[in-house]
Length: 140
Image 1 (cartoon, rainbow, N blue to C red):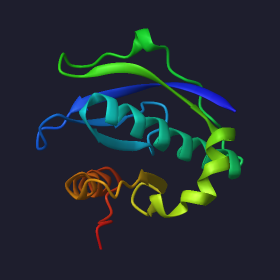
Image 2: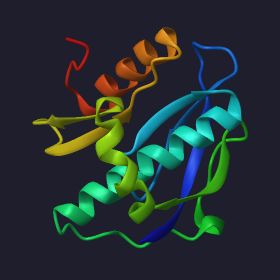
Image 3: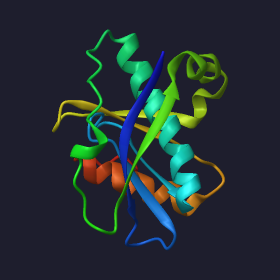
Image 4: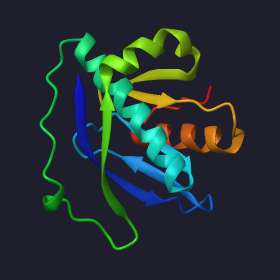
């Protein structure tokens, strides 16, 4: 199924030219990328993984917030991200080692991460962000 959701792209304060991506409607989907283009592609993946998992669990898929109603600080960018869970499902099993999910007993939610073996610094920062968002130390 095809989905389009608004995403908030925030420049990372610790890594130059990196962006953190969050989805107001899909709180468990958090990622980061080197430059805006990289962050956008990571956002497509994490959104696809989160929504595919929600479909598998028969969870209610939230309605996308109207882009015009999202207010952010001047340094943030709001954009639409599209994903297709049918297409994503076809490649998921082939690349399962690039995807991880953690359960947070604090928030009682799963959090999803798309790993990238290309950039160790990015992976470490993403794990830090996931720990912060989920309340669970996921780097062990």
